Image (cartoon, rainbow, N blue to C red; front, top):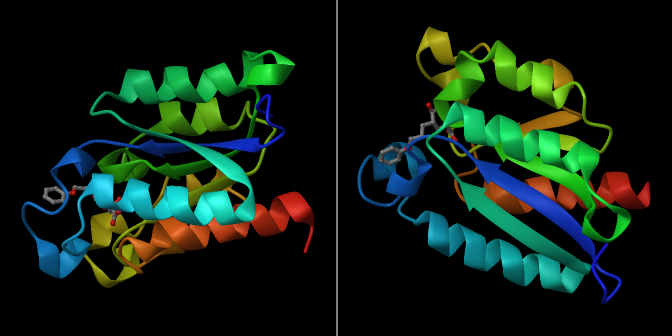
Length: 156
Ligand code: CA2
């Protein structure tokens, strides 16, 4: 919760998502990650949240950020994690282990519909730790994930 009384939501983006909007628009859409952050921040403001939006290409950094949510002081605490782990979704037991120590809602999200794509993308190591998964709606997956977290946090 921030000093202004708003809940904070951590939005984590994994490898290569910094390249959004530069290629493969037929799969990922034409929005950049900055566009997505802007749209999310606008929606979050209406719903009464502060968004902390981050991207890294490093698996270790993602794990550090996830771990920090479990050790933060009250004033710094996050209310939910929204996670697009990129390709680590399909490879990382270490991210699953980190998520399993978290006791706030976790929404896994993807821009593309991973089930419509190559078979190796059909399996997610991280889904068992998530409250739910949203995929296939392009940049709008982020807004839908935020709405999902809002529903969980407000039990509506
Ligand atoms: O659909 C998603 O959001 C993914 O998490 C994106 C990952 C992919 O490995 C997952 O299977 C599904 C890849 C992100 C890379 O995005 C790029 C976008 C444009 C140009 C280059 C990379």
